[in-house]
Image (cartoon, rainbow, N blue to C red; front, side, top):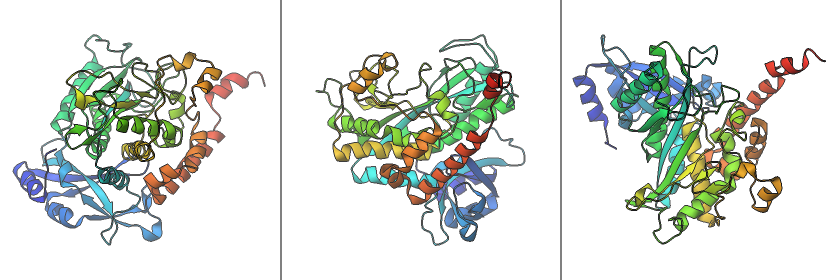
Length: 443
């Protein structure tokens, strides 16, 4: 990562006719927030931050303690390529949210991730991730009429979706976000763009940027892009598989040439930690009512906390080792969806893995059979539990989790749980189309 400082940003802004700078941050649900300053205020913002009222931000301060400061991170300075250039160029920077006394604000998801990354650094590790974010294109936001009937890896006739994906990739790369792959996904009008792995903080910023770029490009072409986990009944939902690895300096801490799986003890303990805590972190990686419509058998989304080398029905997959590619050794966590808060999701996955390393959890044998096709007795014999089946079940599990509370901190933990209870109560009280179709004519 190229390190940028205040002087670099000021010089770049002047040379490239930057007029407006959008200051970005996220609330606890992972919704991107923004306010703009002009270039004349840039130096002051970089030195002291910009004050704002945090009382209206989800999960932020109460009204009696609402003064917040957004402190821009110069490393995240990028021009927004979709904004018109006439009248001055528009750039963006991600912000750290701080208290008026200069201390980090406990409710800032970026700070939550930074705290967990420091814990990893204190243990000698750097945390790298590479997420695969899937999404759908629809004709508009009022329905689920797709743009194509293609399937996995299909090269559909040159239609609007192909151009949309291409333009999105080019725009991401203009913003310094490297793309690994892009392709059509399994469901009609479903697509995926995979970001090249990097450190977790940079990647969380990139994931937030990615979601906005996908939507901006779609809107420019008169269509709608959604990261809703399960918008279409009977079709695969959208996931965010997260490839993860720990490094010690230049060395991949997950690799061991002499192990039958080419996994080090560190890697095995990390995976064991994720498997042990999978159920209690699911509220963070899958935070919406709709997330649990995706986590059902039969649609490639994992339901059972198990691991394998090849089998894609498992929660965790360890991609096969290729000689000479030691640094590519990683594990893929397959339950998260792309509507999560990436800062919090990366934080709790890391916390679970580090707990496995600290406690020395033993990794059970991989499951290379299709877990969906096993009987409940067979799963019980192998010690395979199930992920929560609803938002309510996930809330009840997370409420009891010391690991999640420690990873998120009291403020975020309490506010997130409260927000999710409200969401569940609203959903539970709603009469759905399904109920009307099933019961209205017979009851």
